[in-house]
Length: 207
Image 1 (spheres, rainbow, N blue to C red):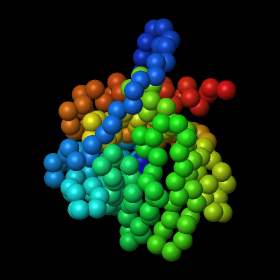
Image 2: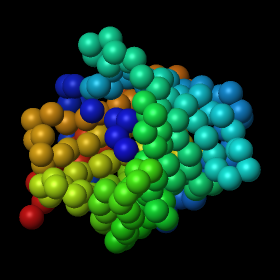
Image 3: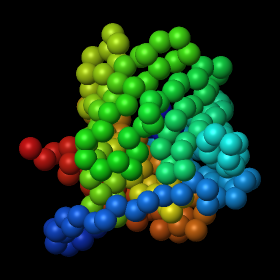
């Protein structure tokens, strides 16, 4: 699922040494039911409302408005760590088994299926450096050419996206970005977006 699609900011006058850190643990039980968050990004505006725990998973609804004014809603469910279990849009539900690879260090793989069949699998290799999650994602969908995405993000303690940047080799001139515009870190979101942008560009250019 990509709910997701800027002028770059100079970060430091000298190169920064990459420092591996202990990866944080996220808790989707923290946001209160009804808590809302908003983002702006390359694909338009979006707002998420936390629907709370339904006894099986932690649910939220995202309402998005594209650059052309089109509006659509996406429901999704995660486990307590914030890893995606399923999402639903326009009557179609996609399941991620056992869950997506969000916040999993190293190599990870999961399958994607709709209500009738397995559509493919996604492999990721992820690191957590200088407060940024950096993932190299390689989806393998039936009937589609292989592609690689570089996904870099910063999240709050409940796994809510604060800044996200995605480079997809299938669309090299069309990066995806988003930054939070409401919430405790909204005032820092431009700086955070600059950091994740640089991290993804460096990862994509590394040999």
